[in-house]
Length: 113
Length: 113
Image 1 (cartoon, one colour):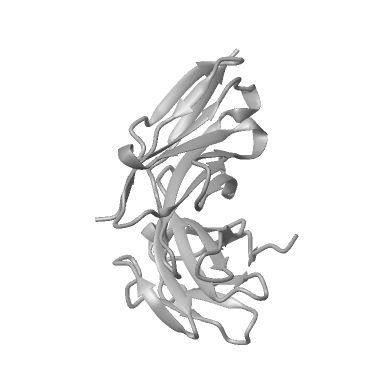
Image 2 (image 1 turned 90 degrees about the vertical axis):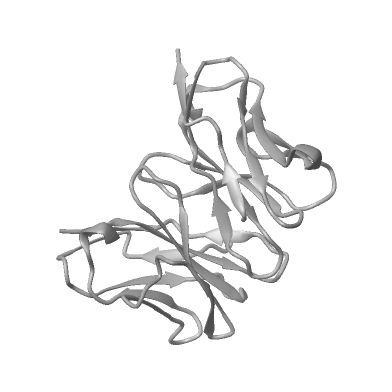
């Protein structure tokens, strides 16, 4: 069964450093998303991406964040200068088409020291 | 505004007892409805989903949920809880198109022997 994959599973970084979280969505999917979940809290939407551009973003997704689909298979989330409060689990998701189920990846746990 | 409410932050049930987790949503149209389960430090596992049709949906691990349009509810049920069901449960909604998923705050289930 196809699945969304994410790498790394756990990333530790120093405050102020740049991090790139990587996702490989399911190959024929069209819509891509990033969500985050701070420890003990609910899952929050960050950004959605369709047709090579951002279709929606939340208030959390400020100028420190960017997304890219560089090669038609990977979907990345970059945090330019990490803060302590960026420590969270980050989930990637993809959807095949308008009425399809959203498939979530296993998550990347980001720890900012 | 679009929202999902899970009124119970945590619930404790005895092993073998029945379970009902409540979920109410606010959405402009009939959304897609989901229940996810998450064990500590793990990703999101889809338990079941409702897109259309029969309002009683069956999921994995013996779970079921009933969509009640008049009450804007999508409660999760299980007739007999197992100790392995102890986890965090998230109700979620999503619209058609490439819309984001909106999650509830979660209900933590504790199972006592």
